[in-house]
Image (cartoon, rainbow over all chains, first blue to last red; front, side):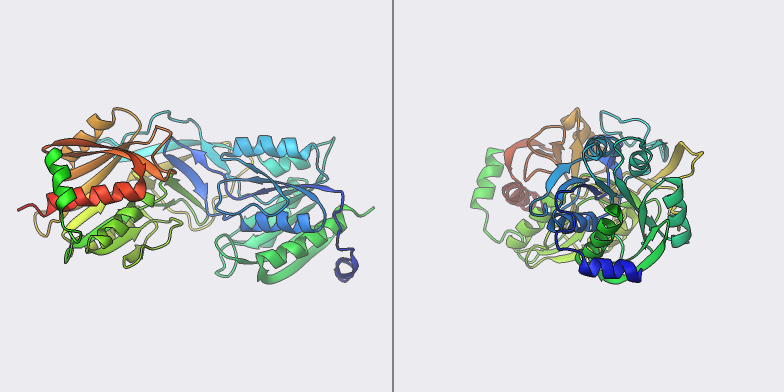
Length: 232
Length: 232
């Protein structure tokens, strides 16, 4: 990591010049009916900060965004999506053309098995209800598993316990090149915060990046991703 | 309705001077685990516009807000809540002290039966999952059913079909004094829009308020609520 730090210090400013980067960001929303949905607390801030940092590093950036309340970073191509299947389709199309794919979105693991066209009515006699869920595709794992047109693939792992163990398991199982792990159970950092602390893990080892603004953390992550992805 | 229009035209500007009004707004979020939740598309705009209009009409306003991305209207006391049970508790406390209660929040009808302290892991062998839901309390009906310290109680009905029929059923069943019905299936109006068209229904009849900015609609609704609530 001393080598990595030295490399990132002396890397040219435009470390991703001429490269194409696709990034997913934010949550997905999985509709139960026209008014209800299942979602999660992702703000999209980390993915949007990564898109801005990659653009500043010279990359041509496609940002595939779930429903978030954030402005599009300058110079970035944004594709808005809602559900995981829609995000998967947009991500697969972008991955066909990109050198680096970063899955920073908090994709819902499950979606309702069926969508009700009309709002589900609450009935007097009905105090309990069950919602059947089916597993969503693992978008980043699908791209990492490619044998052709496979970009350098980076995943994220938001965990509440055994953070490094769970994240390293995902790195291996999903065939990722790098995974960025964070502990969403801590107060400073995680979904709603402007700050975060993460651990970057790849086959060679791990590096802890201490708590920083997501914008600063994004610069550090893009520097490390550029170094590793473009290594000969 | 000609009479109502004339009354609202000639009503004093400070029609709610010295009155206490409590308003719920926005969606509720029902947590499945530390990162996942069930919610709905309510933006909170209508409830926030009503709070601003009631404050301008001279009322002392308490706004009980679910998770929304809106600034607090000037002069309004805001209480932030997340889940339906928390909103119910805040609403009951506010109802003890208010003259008029307006339930404009889109409270989740159901919440997960149990909360998982740790993030639910997606397992390889697990392609389907069911989430057991239990019915949430009907906040506005609970307040309308009071026999003591009962404020004038106004509900909202967001419907996708048989709008007036469903809304009138709710008015009677929930013992409301007035219900404001809107069709969330139409393009112009409803949750994400700045505009809305509604029908105001009470025991005496109904009045259609055509599509207008939610801020304008809120003025019209507060004028009608003030007239009806303060009628001798």
